[in-house]
Amino acid sequence: MQAMRRSAVTARVPLVALFRAGRGPSRALSAQAAAAVEEAKEPEPDLAVGSALMDALKPHEIVQKLDDYIVGQPDAKRAVAIAMRNRWRRHQLPDDLKTEVVPKNILMIGPTGCGKTEIARRIAKLSQAPFLKVEATKFTEVGFHGRDVDQIIRDLVEVSLTLTKKKQAEILLPQVQRVAEDRILEILTGPHPRDSRESFRQLLRDGALDDRSIEVEVAQKAPGDKGGVIQVDSPVSVQEVLGKFQKMANKRPSEMKKMRIREARPVIEEQELEKLMEAIDIKKEAISAVEESGIVFIDEIDKICSSGAYRGADASAEGVQRDLLPLIEGSAVNTKYGNVNTDFILFVCSGAFHHSKPSDLLAELQGRLPIKVELKGLSEDDMYKILTEPVTNLIKQQIELMKTEDVELVIEDEAVREIARVAAEVNRTLENIGARRLHTIVERIMEEISFDAPDNEGGKMVVDKALVNERVSDMLIQSDLSKFIL
Image (cartoon, rainbow, N blue to C red; front, side):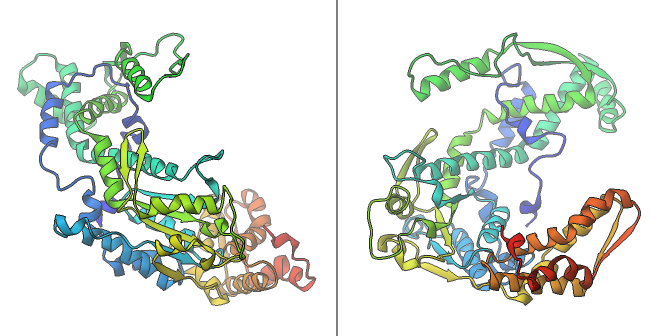
């Protein structure tokens, strides 16, 4: 649990900066960094599937976490929780049995705005495994102009690379900070006795030396540098382009730059982290994490269904379904980092199926999604709970937004219930867009308050049932509902 909440790196070392290639002036390991590398090579328990699986949440804990943000839909939450736990269970099996246990993919069916996509978003934050959410409508059949479904796995590998780097940065950070501290002390004290250096170390840790200036070797941006752009005048292979990039990164000139210690420390830590990262096969671990614990959420699967008896060639519908078959069943996908096997990737598909039904999917695709979960539409009570129960509910968001203007916003309970009633009624009389209707209504009520808030600093604003009726209910009476259509 602690691993899930732990920050990847401290604010002093921005992640974007940590992984920027070629920043360090020297690619050789310093003595301290070399020692840190040896320390980092101590056996780790299958880091590729790593802490995500070792600290896996139990199903009821996952459901409790989802309950903090999503109202209702217990069946969908249970199905996803069991699937996530099964990833951990599989890794506890003997190797000969582990290869035979494949994930049971899930198909979530329910009206729009009932929580399907929100479940995916929250699972992505809970899970430390590589996770990717895509829309089925963005892909076309292989051979046609557009993105083919293999791009899903390539994108998942990129996500895994970033996740793996963050995990490694988290592991190496204490060593990096120690090495950076030694480098700063070496610059400050020179070849002085160890006792002198240790006295400076305590001053450095206390922040007493933060305003002292030192000279640090940093990468120099050459005149006319086009930001790392590689000019390619003729068709070349990916390996050649990567080779050119590596040469360019290694040959970047460096210069001595004078800066304060508080500014120099992140630069030195970044350089040392890059050196330590070179001793770790990030690509191999990232691919292993995708193959063993990757999760893909495919939304809008119903939009690539053909309703009715006719089934013809369609590059963005039936064709995409056919291309998804081997991907979900298990196949090798070629990426620039190597082949990725999809046998053990968990696929969760979802769709509203307003104008089609799950049986309109290809029979082969239905068979590859054995667990089917139906999500229910939202009632008026559900709307009220959505407005009040989640940790970051809409009412709380509006109150906190007004606090930034030093305005106290009070939304009475009767007003909240009226908002829920109106949302449910408009969903019944117009197109049902589920919980998304609440955003429309709340923003309409808050429009004038938000506009006037900067001029009412230190004031108090109350939203009661009468105000809600004034802004919304009169439109229902007049049947002028056009302003609610998104």
